[in-house]
Length: 240
Image 1: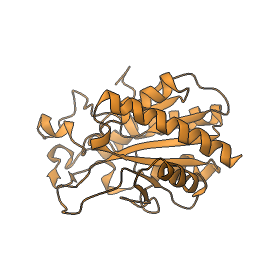
Image 2 (image 1 turned 120 degrees about the vertical axis):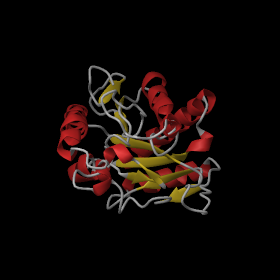
Image 3 (image 1 turned 180 degrees about the horizontal axis):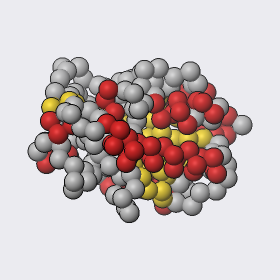
Image 4 (image 1 turned 135 degrees about the vertical axis):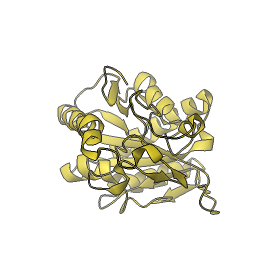
């Protein structure tokens, strides 16, 4: 975390830009919070969207797509959940008990992490008035608590507004990728940040999930950043 803030912003914001939002970009746990889990868990998908921070950085610095990134682990406070969602401070995740969160002061976590993150994001988006928001996440090829394989290389999620998603699904498919349509999670059930900051304001967005094993290295992150920037640009044009 920088200056104790649960977010950081990268790149030069300008009115009408395409922007990136990454709610799960960090595995950082503040020193005064004890989660009661081993350090190895913080390197896994339950703590962070693997590969997302590197892609978002490259989108901002190489492709002129400024980014708003979380700087705290989803195990401390899940910024991609509504305040009243029981998983906003998770007590378990994919079969792992997060013992330090049992009995945690929920309102204190929200005040420290969730509320300032979303307040800053709201102000940032109001200033920029983006033509398109890229909500960037990654997913594990297989959950520890499930035998189901996840074959998609990337996927687009949406709730009520699928304007951008429809174009993005087509464009990523034309690149030869296996693309999920509201998979492996449905945006009709899990779309908190985009419901709040995009759909509620009529802003078009593409909520993109990329499979983590495809973006674990810097080279892979650079390749995906270039693809995402190209697709996002074409989606934005198609929406005009």
